[in-house]
Amino acid sequence: MPLDLAMITTGTDAAPWRSPERHWPALTAATAGLDAPVGALHLGALRHNAHDMVRRAHGTPIRIASKSVRVRSVIEALLRRPGYHGVLAYTLAEALWLADTVDDLVVGYPTAERGSIRRLATDPDLASRITLMVDSTQQLDLIDAVLPPAQREEIRVCLELDASWHAPVLGHLGVRRSPVHDPADAGALAAYVVRRPGFRLVGMMSYEAQIAGVVNRPAGRPVDGAVNRWMQSRSLPELLERRARAVAAVREHADLEFVNGGGTGSLEATAADASITEIAAGSGLFGGHLFDGYAHFTPAPAAAFALDVVRSPSPAHATILGGGWIASGPRRRGRAVVDKPAIQYVVRERLHVTGVARGLSTPTT
Ligand SMILES: Cc1ncc(COP(=O)(O)O)c(C=O)c1O
Picture: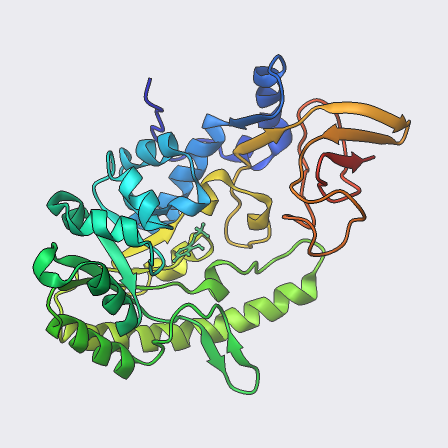
């Protein structure tokens, strides 16, 4: 049965979703008889988040950032809802896989997957629905090296503009996503791409990670919050002005179908940018703890992962089987996939994690 993410009606009481202790017991009850490891989604919380993100995007369509969801049925269900359109995939192989049921895919990073490029480039249907990310002529060369223009379909490409802030004194703030930072460079690359046979420039993307992905009210860290808010209040106007000029410079050469920006943390701010036609977002759907520290929205925790407590070496300790993905041995920064797991709501016991998730067991008190 397909997943139904029909939106909750506007005005429905959001309070239960904002207080996990009110909706978490239902997940506990529903999974109590299952063998661990158990992954579960709370549909009510997910619907609430999906609805709230559309509200925050204020009419700008949301392209689902698949790397933050990774559950195909959820992606497909969201795409049946108003407010969601298309997927920002994280690899070309993933985009090809999703293309069975998703008709508009942008690969969020440049690709060097030769086999996947060949598949894309020899299938007119796929080539008409999947867009590749570029920020340099070398990525075009690589595609041509796999198959020259005369032997393949035209490839749709999206030009990525770096959204980071080159702050006076402080220097570079943000993610180094693209060498193309200045509007003039964006315009020059666009002019080059449109002259080059075998490519069609259809979109632009710029992801303001320093605004969308940096918390502005971290719990217990008021100074960090104030610094981040100051940084974001300075970075946003710089980006809006520069992005507008860059989009205009690219539009002189290509009739863009979309201009993508933002993420879960910046839905309101990015929607207010007149240069943007869509926002890529995903993390707010499952509402992981990384997204607890924002002042302007509160996603409901919607995804759960449960493991078994298998022993209790002392009354103050319990050991969970599994939960980590590192070698056994002493816990040190850099050894764990997640250094500080935020296991806050647990299914069967009230636990606090005292150690990082380890290779086979996770110490807790
Ligand atoms: C290009 C791009 N856009 C948007 C996002 C935002 O995703 P999320 O809403 O999951 O933070 C990301 C996440 O890394 C991204 O890489």
